[in-house]
Length: 120
Image (cartoon, rainbow, N blue to C red; front, side, top):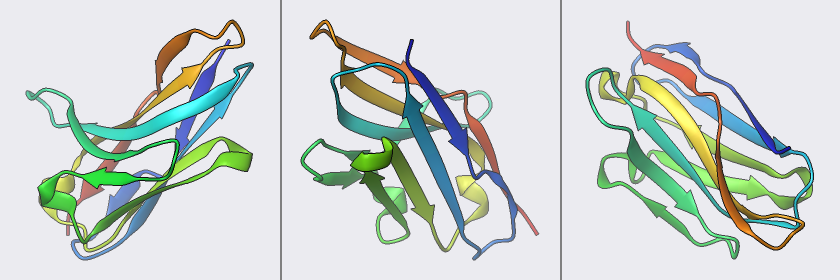
């Protein structure tokens, strides 16, 4: 059974920084793309950033230049460094991981979500 455990959310003032982590555990062959999504109450979950297995990254326009996604393959962990946070970044953040199982099947898993609140 694969599990994703997120950490790092919290309350921060505008202009502050937070780093989210998402660690995958369990039995699998390899981890492919890793992503961060966020959901604001009353809205659909939205993609924030993606990092491929090869390390290529992509960001939604609203976070470009402020957020950085990166991964540590040895720790099966993806991070989201969030700088210059704005109240509009307030949301529940979810990690999403695509991996190949030991049976060589493609599967996608979600973290439990972590609350980020940007407020003075």
